[in-house]
Image 1: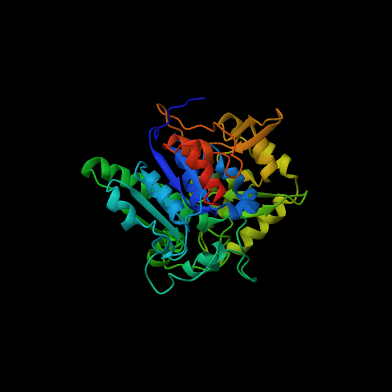
Image 2: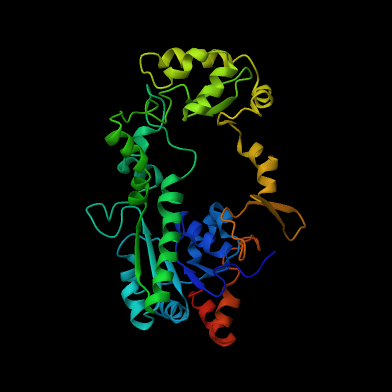
Length: 382
């Protein structure tokens, strides 16, 4: 495995606990950054939930509410490049580990705060989770059946895309700016802002095409036969994405319905086309359709389960499913690194550490003596 990723040489201190921050720091760690996750030991019982995104990291315990714990963090921050935190706005200031405090001793620091609603505005102090951020941003309203309630997605869109990914992008931008100016900066990531930004195409369709934005009844959500999902004979599903007329034309020729070709977006005939395709796709099983459609240029795909996707040759070839061995020599599977760099590729190099596993080694590396470390442990600081 390559050991020198694109971010090799950078040190990241990650104070975040829930999904968005650790997902962001996982991206950085996958590409070579040294990531030290820091948590209070009171949360040890909750460590398992986030295990998958803790790969390639070190993990230490630290009580930031103590004077000694705060000073340890500031000593570490003085030698770090990036800090990530996911507390509610104002918490880091109360703890004395906020951007202003850190940047006063280390002006090169890049400090990223990830919160639900951002550091400013009327919602800044509200508690929330992924579903709430999607709701407020206008995303949840367009997910689900047309005649039913909004459906909560099976993945955490606000946490991962609105929060973690945007945080990683912001950090990389700030790194570039630091290279040019020699100074770090503060990054304010709102998961709700990030979620709303995902509506750019939806807004364009509404404004420029004058089409409605409704659950399961919009241009790219079940309104037309060419962009839809269809049940098969074995009660599985396939997706159809024949947006461009050339793909729709190929599909119509396959089914012998050339009369549908000019009617692709004809609202007066759209239900007729949907009903026809529903009837056709129910005549074969999903695997039979995979065989029948494999050579057709129409933009389609089988709806696979997670287990099926992880077994698919596509993702094995793309190294999106990787295995590491644990201490018992048993294989542990991880999702791979999606950003494929040719000269400095990222990699999955190490298993998630146990809670606090790296505490002693990290402190030693930052110059603390064995005697001091023992005192920290005895007084509950680590």
